[in-house]
Figure 1 (spheres, rainbow, N blue to C red):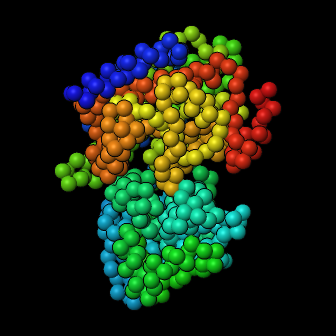
Figure 2: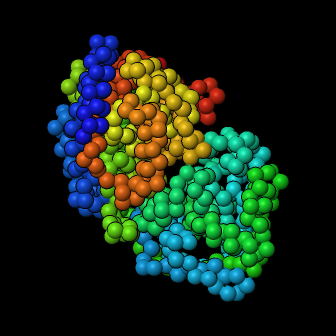
Length: 552
């Protein structure tokens, strides 16, 4: 209780000092807490897409947006907007317990789903999987990057074979090289690796999990990959998905290499060089047998809107995802619900309250959209669908301000963003935060690839200036030590685990202050002729430049 009072007083003093200089409303920490509490309660069953919990979530968020004063901004039918955008998704699930094994010199070693291995339900269109003694080939980091003169595949024929690869980039171990050093490139993401496996004709791929390069532990891998899977509906799903997509524990990989007469660590070092060549795990093969329940379902993005008074065709977007992992395997306490209080009931509550603040303010010159997307936890699918089939043109979308897993504790002296992208939107955010006594701290873990793991990436790769705001770790009450301790606790015990639950002692005062900064950023964009852009050397600049004529 003492901490809550101190944090509240600190925020009140800070807000009072800044009020005269910064035109921003205040945000109610108690309202944020209550919304987070409701959304992450057991009654919402972890907010899984295409479950009864989705209907409950949509009903709640829409009711809050209506009460906040927003208008519907979703699908257009007969000249009338709905509150949602329909998002068709492929839903796949393994039926029963899969039979999995690795054979060594003809002797099969059974593998247990969720223990040594985490097999994802197939998304290549398969209704069953029957892999018998497929050869295993180590492909280093599984990267084919012509612009970096890098090819781990070296022309090997992977048809009928299972590729085994390392997570992250070849630079991760050394911190130097052609892949951004410690900062992860898209080549380091597991999504890319599976896509490349499909392009190379592999029957499947096993990604070797290691905590440091993955940036999360095995529990996160298990909980995220042994549940129902989703993808956007594709014309040719096998072009981007091999039949088998799975992770394996490092200890299993080391043992497999050893039994094939190979040294895991030595091969990892070789894989960090251009000279690396694929290595067959002699005498070893992989088998899998299970059936798949596959169907196309429809989930929904939730969309609130305020029409611009002068330029309604120009749009500022605030985004956050409403979904979490739903109901899954029980933990040691028997808890099966992944409540997602931080990830991302906080972002959804923030979206509602930002909408309320804009609705109470004078009408902005540009339109402001409050986009609550689905299936982020399934691979950014709701934002990917919106960006592929936008309700409002991307060319005249001014920018995207994404909120994912905000900190419900007290205020901090700093903030960050996911990744290390350079763009004018970040410059504006830095300037606005300075007015509130906050400084920018670069992403402390660029090697974790957070830039590719939040919904802003779906827009960024299409050229739209987009950032994902991150709460600071230099707390006013406790400094960096307290902030880091909370981060470590969250990563170890709560992220994508049943422990991500609302707590009564969370003050939400820091989040309330962060929303003041984000309000100023969006309000300035919505009431100006400004078009923020990417830096000249950004990989997204050329895509944005192609639509420059639409913004004149």
